[in-house]
Length: 406
Image 1 (cartoon, helix red, strand yellow):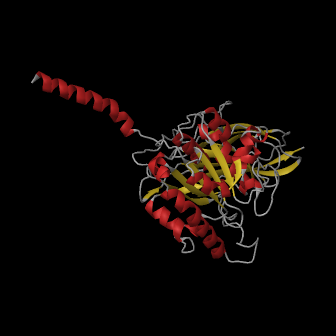
Image 2: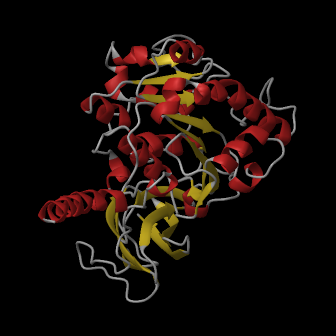
Image 3: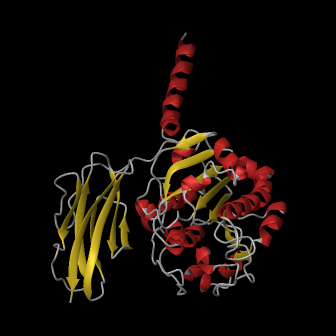
């Protein structure tokens, strides 16, 4: 009897030790995380569209984030948010080296391997401009100082033709950033910029995915613990909800909840954190450091806690008194010197997840918090400023004001 009692006691003790991990399981670890970027189509034009049967079959059988939103328009800011946790620039023609904290830096610190597989890249290690149909601003890892200034890391910028060989030879890195060229990512037509229907663009992108991603999903090593994320960078420019519009994000792998549809609000910084979590890297660049991961799309996963709905005062004590956005500085109609300090707070009946500042319709600042206090350089003249906030349900609140900069 004593032995039985002791055995039960040991079992219960072990169960209690294991239980917290089971209840609060997050993103399962993976040796192969692959992200594939598609272009410029909103959720409703992709999910359920007969032009993309392969992608829709993956979405139906695996996990689909139904409330995933891009961060900005145009493309480059989204690619950078996905890899740095910051928008950095909205200039698609940007060509400077980026020294900001980024995913490559964290992968290297975490002892992980990586490659950017860019279709139609002119050569291994290429960091030059566009070479149609290769578009550099779709290849964000090619901008980072950690890569550009390293003769070793530049060798991880490879044409997509290397992907099949690496897969066949068991040499895929821990992290793969996959960039179809602009004829195959639903941006342009199959043979050039124009001359086809939108359905033809999507059908071409879908066929490319089936040809190139299906072999990865069938690979025995990938089937152990791999994760593939297929996501669109931004919606059409007519949709600026949460900055860049609602887009499709499909997550595939053995550890993914099958046939699951997530209704949690996610953006590119959430995916950045999720990819690093999956690789076992527990430190993050930019907004990924405070973003929740996408744990609910994985078996046994639960979303990270969201921020409290009660806003905390900003550095100068700005607090939202009622539901909406309160701008404490600058005052509407005021004349203020550049850089202009913006101090604001937001309140909702649900947790406020992000705030953004637009100047003359262009996104200039984003923070995943219910308060902001920042200074922005603004050109002389009269400007329209919008301070906008979102809560965890997707509800949007904003305050618009006019300011004059001498």
